[in-house]
Image (cartoon, rainbow, N blue to C red):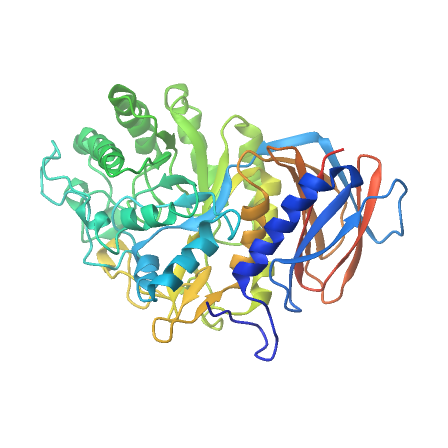
Length: 495
């Protein structure tokens, strides 16, 4: 597998062996050296490290030299972590399928294997077509006008060699993950109008038919051997299907929620995916302040487009502490406001710092999961689907986690992938965020306790020089030197 580097003269080891070595070293440390109170260190940095295992360091009873100090307190706990990952879309599988067979499996392993890869654990798929479903023309699962009984419902496209269901099955050969599924558009015949995007609302007379459409999707996927953990009614309802949240509330409480219960389906409901944090804060109370609707809602997903808004996520978490928050989509895209001065897709490692800081901020605000948009695209930032009436324009260039050059088979693991992999690999589902106190410009720390009782700290150094850092935990201290432009994972046994 080819790997790109910020500097063509820079020598960096193959990403899969590095990840494997990191996992093996940490496993050995936890099993054999727990009494020594040592911490395993894994680093990715501007200098060239990629998931590189460094010599273990020992906690000392007394504080050592100072520097930037963070206090880790496992007694103070916050939200449960559901996972980290990206989206499973036709565009990604189209790119994978251009590679030789062995290289295809290497890519899938690097993404999903929890030991030999990043171990992505929370993934997004889509209910029929979206802008990166380019294996054929625009489609829904039932394009027969007026077929309210869903007699012509079919997921056949998803079962094709480049289809989403096929992609999910291939990914699950290398690891396990939860799946959430939103929908851009229902069948056009359910909409108030098709040719005017600003009026593409769902007609209320089709609410029962739409509920059945969702249920058939879940049932047909189950027949294909795929369980959808979370159903999300609409993707960015302010941008695609222009349905107001008052209607989403009524769909949930009067149609979709009751029908899921009637059919005995175990899939949980997500509210809908607002296009940014501020829109989620503004609109979600419309649904959640209605007790009959709220009882069906298991999670609040939102997107990370636009600057800031983390305070809005924190406010939602405070207002509805019993409903987990998921950041379920974000990327660079010219159509989403990325300046044309930025060349997409990006291959530089340094870009990972932007995404690492965003992950930190969303989790600190209360998010339980963090999902990037396109997991895999080609060297052009595509391929993309084209259907202007559905908001899918030509030249919809975007940035993925992994770039597969369809011409020469080079595979580039971007900076975004590297930073996200530190979280997905070492902060496994069921982990709980714990307190990490301390503040320093350009250096951040966030900490977790894993389900098996390990403590994990993630540290980012966004500065252009190394940072001397100390972690204090349970009466012991350990001194670290964070490389310039880096993310460092520190993992140790709880005392």
